[in-house]
Image (cartoon, rainbow, N blue to C red):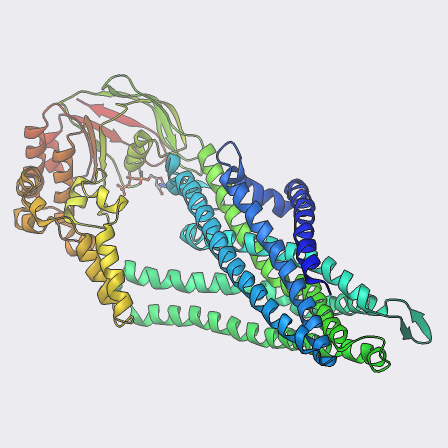
Amino acid sequence: MDWNAELVNSAWWLLKAYLVTLVIFFISLFLLARSTVWGRQFWALTGGYFSPKRSWKPILGLCVILLLTLFAVRMDVLFSMWYNTMYTSLQNLDEATFWFAMWLFAILASIHVIRALIDFYIQQSFIIHWRKWLNEHLLSRWLDNQAYFRTQYLEKGIDNPDQRIQQDVTLFAESSLSLSMGVINAIVSTIAYTLILWGLSGPLALLGIEIPRGMVFMVFAYVLIATVFAIRIGRPLILLNFLNERFNADYRYALVRLREYAESIAFYAGEKVEGALLRSRFAQVIGNAWAIVRRSLQFLGFNFVVSQTAAVFPFIIQAQRFFSKQISLGDLVQTSQAFGRLQENLSFFRTAYDQFASYRATLDRLSGFTSAIEQAHRLPAPAIRADGTRLALENLSLSTPAGQVLLRDLSLEVAPGKPLLIRGPSGSGKTTLLRAIAGLWPYSEGAIVRPAHGTLFLSQKPYIPLGTLRDALYYPDSPGREAIDNPDPKGYRQSRAASDSSALKNLDGLLSAAHALNAPPASSATDETAVKALQDVQLGHLASRLDETADWGRILSLGEQQRLAFGRLLLAKPVAAFLDEATSAMDEGLEDAMYRLVRQQLPEMMLVSVGHRNTLFAHHPAHLVLAGKGSGKWEIHD
Ligand SMILES: Nc1ncnc2c1ncn2[C@@H]1O[C@H](COP(=O)(O)OP(=O)(O)OP(=O)(O)O)[C@@H](O)[C@H]1O
C-alpha cells in the first residue's frame, strides 16, 4: 500500500465527503423541519438560534463539528488500513515495513489525539453557547408578561417548569448534537466500510447458490434482522424511561414541599403522613428502576449476543480464502475490522433507538412548555392605560374563570392623599380587583387607568427574596443586584482553588466559604436610608444584620415581614400603593403606627387597601364595599 498517496487521497476524500455531507445535511434538516412533527418542534424551539440574521457563529460551529466528525471517520479507515499493512508485514516477516508501520502509527495516533481533543472542545463550547441561548430564550418568554403566573389560568397547566428550563434544555442541546453527529458518523462510516468490505470480500456459497461479494450482503442482512428483534425487545424501555423521569420528578417535588411547608408540617407533627407519601413515591421510583433493569437485561443480552457473534463471523467466512492464500493475514484482519465497524455503524440505529425516544420525550416537554407560554401570552389582559398619575376604574367588570360575576360596572377614582379601603365578604373579589389593576387577571371588561410606573402591591404574605435583608428591603429594586449579575470571580476562584487542593473534602464547607466571599462589604451596612427605614417600621434591632444572607422568609415572623414590606414602601416611594390585608398579622397599635407613618412620609401617595378591620376606617376616608355572593354589586362610601 502506498501510504504517501493514501494521505493525499484522504485529503481529497475528506474534501469531497465534506461538501457532499454538508449539502445533504442541510437539505435533510430542512426537510425534517418541514415534514416531521419532531422536526417542526425542533425548529420552533431553536430555529432562532441558527438564524444567520442573529449570528453566523452557530452555523459555522456546526460546519466545523461536521468536518471533525468526517475527519474521525477517515482516521478510522486509515487505522483499518494500517492494521492491514502491519499484519501483512508480520505475515511476510518484512521487518522494514513493520518499523515503517510503527512510525506511521505514531503519526496517525498523534493526529487522532489532537483531533479528538479539538472535537471535544468545539462540541462542548457549541453545547454551552446553545444552552445559554435556549435558557435565555425560555427564561425571558417565561418571565415576559408574567407568563409564569398566568399559565395557572390555562385549562391544562404545566408540571415541573423548573425541570423543563433547567434539565431538559441541557439534555436537548446535548442529545441534538450527539444524535445528529452519530447519524452522520454512522452513515458515512457505513459507506466507507461497505466499500472496503466490498474490495475484500469474495463470493459466498449459500444453500448451493454463489453470491458474489456475499460478505457485504450478509452483514446488512444480519444487522437488519438483529435490529428488528432489538426494537421489539427494547420498545418497552421508552415508556419505562419516561416514567422514570416522571416518578423522580414527583418524588423530588414531594421533598421540596416538605422543605417549603416545614413549619406547618412540624406543627401538625405530620411526619407520619409525609413519610408515607414520600415512601410511596420513592417506591414507585424503585419499582420502575427494577422494571428498567429487567428489561435492559434482555435488551443488553440480545445486543451482546449480536455483537459477540459478529466478532467471529467474518473469520469463519474468510477462513477458506485465507488458507487457500487468496487473501493475506492483513486482509483477513481488515475484513474482520471492516465487518465489525459496519455492523457497529449499522447498529447505531438499533442502539440509539431508546436515546432517540428519550430525546423525543424531552422535545415534547419543551414544546409543551413553550406552547403553554404562548397560550398564556395570548390570554386576554385587562385594558390598562396610563393617564399621567391618575388612578381610576371605568365600567370595570370582573368574573372568575368559571364565569361567575364578581364585580359589575365599577367606576371610581382614587385621589392622592385620600386612601380607599376595599371591604366585603370573603371570596367577594377584593384581591381579584387588585390583581386586575396589576394586569394579572384575564377575565375582565372595562378599563383601568393607572400610572405607568411607580406602583407597588403589598400582599398579606410579603415575598421575601433569596439573599440579604437589604435585598428584601429594596425588592424588587435590589441594591445587591450587581453581586448576582457578576458573581465575585475572586471568591469563586478562591473556592475553586481550595477545592482543587483539598481533594473535595468538604464541598458544603467550601461552598459556604465562597458565599461568604461573595457577600457585599460590611461598610455598606451603615447605609443610613435603609437603617432609618428599618427603625421607622420598628425593626431597628435588625439594622446590624442588613447584609446578612439568610432565609429571612423563615426567620422573621409574619408581622415582622409585613413591617419589612412597609419599609419597602417607604423606600420605594411609589405614586400608588395597593395593600392587600398587609397588616393582618400586626396588632392594632402597630397597624395604626404603620398607616400613620405612611401617611406622614408619603402624604400625596394614592393608597388602596383591602381589609376587614374597623381600625382601618380611621385611615381611609373612602370605602368601596363589595356585596359578593355572585351579585357583582358594590357601593362607594365617601
Ligand atoms: N386562579 C383562580 N382560579 C379560579 N378561581 C379563582 C382564582 N383566583 C380566585 N378565584 C375565585 O375568585 C373569587 C374571589 O377571590 P378573591 O381572592 O378575590 O376573594 P377575596 O374577596 O379577596 O377573599 P378573602 O377576603 O377571603 O381574601 C373566589 O371565589 C375565588 O375562589
